[in-house]
Image (tube, rainbow, N blue to C red):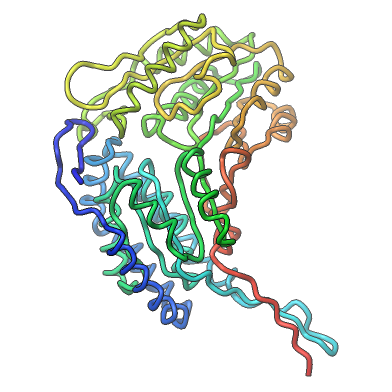
Length: 454
């Protein structure tokens, strides 16, 4: 399998894909390793993760360069991702023992009761390419700490990053028979679905997540899905500074080239401030620098996948054919690389794909609304439910809108944000289950109830 640099379309290297036989062999190794790993004290398991945490920093230059070269995000954003991943790992290091400790429920009377938490066993972590460190550590770190072993499939678009993760975990003290990567495309992922695993944890598209859930449903094992979104953002008419608000919204749209599950995907602006907001947004958008992600000062690198150029262009054409106005961007430059200029469309509505279907790119539709009621109705008009954002100076007013959002996260005066201390979850087509917070720690264990009499 060739590893392609999306900025230059050159081959970085070629790797060998796993086969059904090699995957079976890795599974058997993890199955035997899990019996030993769960017997290791949680303190020693956490110590190995602490070593991995330190190694991420020690090797950050190599890791960041690899990530930017194979996935296309600007180099500084690769460093930012590594720092963010280390912050999440620190949360798991500091909190896992507390939330995995046995809990005495009843200590008086004839029958005492307690709950203990036992690892699931061998789990599959089918991970994503857009934030391979951030979405990966949400799963394999708490899974390993809890005593599970992990069959880890990085996306084919971040294969080299996945191999770095495997190497550094082993170097940090996680035994080889406790964490194994499997390399390849969708056919390799298909082999994982055939294995008698004890849990499946997937990050990616709704279409693939639904397929995985249906394929493994008969196994009656945990299946957790972190899927996409069509995340709305509403700018109320009382915002204090239009230019600052527009700049914040722009970052929420185009950071990581818009290739974020919780990126802002549609914007609604109250009519009193609509014109000023659009002008400020377009002005800021035109200042973005697009180019080779390894160069300093670059805001927009290439898309990770070539086919996304055509998909985003089709969304723009669908919108303009139905009456939308393209104010800037949207062009695919000539030459090498999977680049696309960030695009801004107005006069949009919900008959257009750009306001209904996930884009996963640096394009946005901005729609005018008359009041909060109209904004709420439009924000609710979706099959997804990951995040929703409100910009306003009045928290009470904003909270009334947030309370009506059927989404896993809501934001006031911020967007595109994830915190290790809060559950990360989606509703409807945005997924099942939670990562992060104490709930994300306990996602990788079975509770066992003890009834003790005597």
